[in-house]
Amino acid sequence: MKIIFVCHGSICRSPAAEMLFRQEAERRGVSSLFEVSSKALSSEEISNPIYPPMKRELIKQKVKLYPHESYWLTQKELDECDYLFYMDYENKRRLERYFHNLSKCLPVFYFSPGIVEIEDPWYSGNYALVVEELRQCVKDILDNILK
Image 1 (tube, rainbow, N blue to C red):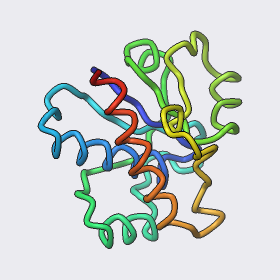
Image 2 (tube, one colour):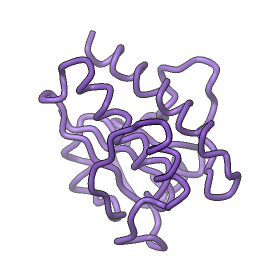
Image 3 (cartoon, rainbow, N blue to C red):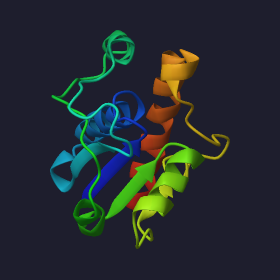
Image 4 (cartoon, rainbow, N blue to C red):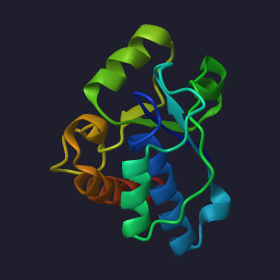
């Protein structure tokens, strides 16, 4: 199953979600069922690694890191994935503007009551909160898609 996480630049939220998803799938013994990636919806950060404050927070929270560079989402990738999870409603607007056939696109918090958006920590500085919320979201995603 192909899963893509997207956010604005793919240097904070979407790579964090990807790594948290991989870690949780591995913990559950189902990692072989998934091909997981994270992509950008803008070009500002293309080819950049995870933003250092997010990387520090992931390390602090003992999240296993995988190699990451920011890449722009393509229509082909969207067409070939099973699910695409976006972080906030600005991401949704960008998806609607640039892509067609958004039937596979859901907010990352779709299965997580009480979470209404994943804020961008690049602006807010709330890296710990974002990791905590994404951890809950990926657990809820796995609970629901593995039923």
